Image (cartoon, rainbow, N blue to C red):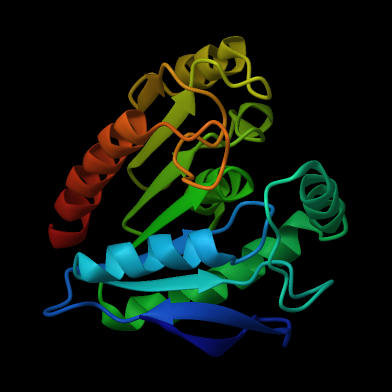
Length: 223
């Protein structure tokens, strides 16, 4: 089980992060990026799972610039609140907070960034703009298509649901055309298929995406 720590971004902003130490010998580090629901129980469980697999995990609370201790569910009211919070934070500031998490995680070795939904988009942007990463993994990031022209600095893989009502397959295809050498996986599932608290959760597809992610980060963090 992890615990809360405090990080400091380069502009002096202090934010919380959920940190889960590795079980046994460390295989490297993972910066885990939240959905629009905060570092809630689901994200903490994912962090603990990666820690149990031998990774030092840091999950920054990316809403802290506008609201502290945000922990939302997945009902329509929570979705609306999460979207509002996201829109109130400048992208550059969020990336500064992620960089602070990368810096912390980097104390334990090479760093992978893994993000879901909003965090999936941010994982892609971390790969194009931030320092200190060995690789990046993005799950169903809706903002990736609008930033597809940015070049990734590190190996990156992406996961998308083929029945995602918020990310058309035409967007996924556009990202693939812009990054022909990137591994982009699609699944017969909807948005949020990795999250066991969401209606579109698909255990089989989530496990397939997880196994691909684990193989990818194991290779990139041990090189």
